[in-house]
Length: 258
Image 1 (spheres, rainbow, N blue to C red):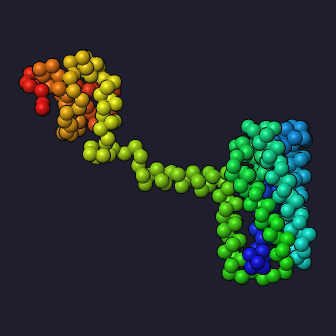
Image 2: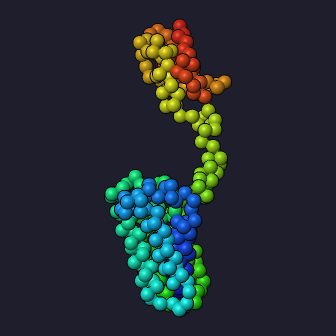
Image 3: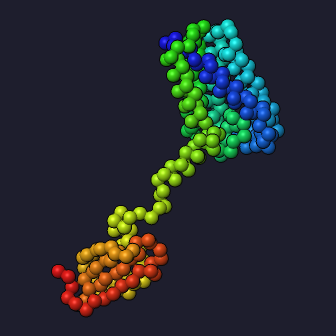
């Protein structure tokens, strides 16, 4: 228990320090403070002073957690502050669902499940910090602390542009979702959807007397065969897609395929 509790003051203190500095040093805070849920709570004119006051409280709690001697009161103060964050997010979600929380300075996204997850994790870490005591860090504590810090960063939508957006771009490059696939990998349903929308199908549909009888791919085209009245209808559908007008049809004067 002590090994798990020992890193908690450092985790919560570093996060509070980060949050406070973002509120105090952000150049856009004054312009965007009115878009936060705090502006709805205290008024737009008081939003900036209120954010700065919260930043001062965060700095005070962070300093208490980092500086000796260790005391359960420090974890208790962090717990009260984290519980206040969770209540504030709940208020923001109910009273101003389109507003951001302003937890890490300027941020335009409204409160979502990630914000609640981060606040809940902060509350759990703060509660654990009450039992931290003057115990040294061990390997277990280091692993737990790093995992908690990574989770807090992953739950912070404010940082998405630094890691999540580049990761998504990398996945797009690797998966190449818009790359041309091999003809055998294009489902027949895709070709039939284009076929049914084509003028060629509309002009010949009254003659058709069967469902699809044969299909083959050749030279970038998918040939679809139907039985028609004393004829065989052969449609040529481009495998690359395109406009329905690109579909062609030929009515062959021969007995329909059995």
